[in-house]
Image (tube, rainbow, N blue to C red):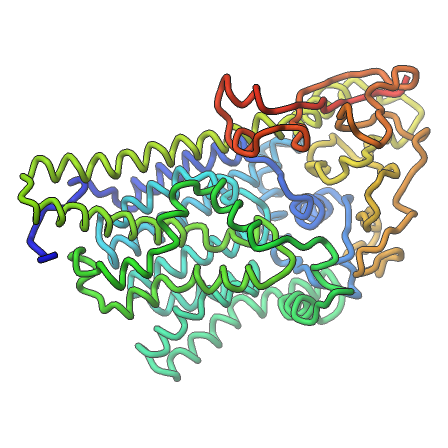
Length: 559
């Protein structure tokens, strides 16, 4: 095709930083309210230690034992500090404090996204940047990742800040934010920054790059080590500990003990969280190599430059495909880069389509109509499926947290303070991993307890009351072996929270009316007996209910 000068501008309006930030904050605050605590690591490795630092009690996992020390208290202390500040205004309402910390995460994410958007605007032009902003704002993947209390989410913030600075040619800040991402969040994110590091090394030379890197390490690593010394009462570098733990893993140790998945796990994950957008993201580099000449902003850059800018998500996916242990949260760090790659692909395809129509002699009106129809159709499908995914998660799985809210705000508030039994035990069996944290129990008087279920791995145990972060606890191992001292007898339980499924092999507490009174019962998806994976992943009124089966999430009280 012979390239002609044709108008491929999508719209005349380009949001500035403050407009983008305002829109993103609104959407991220919705995530803070409606997003689920979908990962038991989020509860027991992050919310529970935060609760301990704030209120003096909570659950400890083996990763926080001073013997292993693979979790840093610097990350926890930041959130506990935010929680302490907001609790000055919210008082004893711990659920409100929980959501206030989430609002902080959502606001920080929105700021990072706005920086990333402005960097993309400078480097790739308004068409690509505006489309990227729209995809980030309405992606169900970003909705989930933006307010999750996980190191991979924190690293995602750092990726957006670093890449935004890199695209905006603020290279010193780019290196600083890369260190922030790796040390403050997840050290493995260094793979994502490899292309950026090589580019800055080439542009500024080895001396400047090394100096900036050393300073950045001092900025973030030194405070992290000092904070961990305060809590662990020994010198340790948690960033190194977690790297070494995973680097030396084998079949008998390491993350593989917690399950392995085939490579298709990530393919399915990307589709449900980005739907049609992930299809456009995959060939971005190939489309740049072939069609870069059609975009006036990309034409200013050499092909190799654009490839370096887009290489990070491909490197990360190769690394993630290689690792046997796979989890959805491992992909959080590249979610904004997926949106950028998809935006570039879509804009290049629009340019190609317009150029074809121009070569065929189509008029300006036809070309304008066609490019808008293409973009609008893709965006409508994307936003519809993204909203459907978010609604599906809330409708199908959100009742677990609703049960705990009801327990905390209604049932436990009515327990007389004069009651002699202390503590009052709220028990869970197979549903231990859906406990949203002690923020959903009013006070230390109410204790979560575990009863034996089919789960045969290691459960957390309460922090010691005195010197809990530095005392070496008994009954922990790094091999995920069951520790039976975690369990209490069912007769010690005052309340029980359980999911009742008609086909389950385990004891059905919800049907045991001789010993239990039902206080609340809400529908919860029975994934195994739902007949359509599509309608299970996406919710469509009137259709999904025909294919989905539901059990009951129950709150029970001992008679």
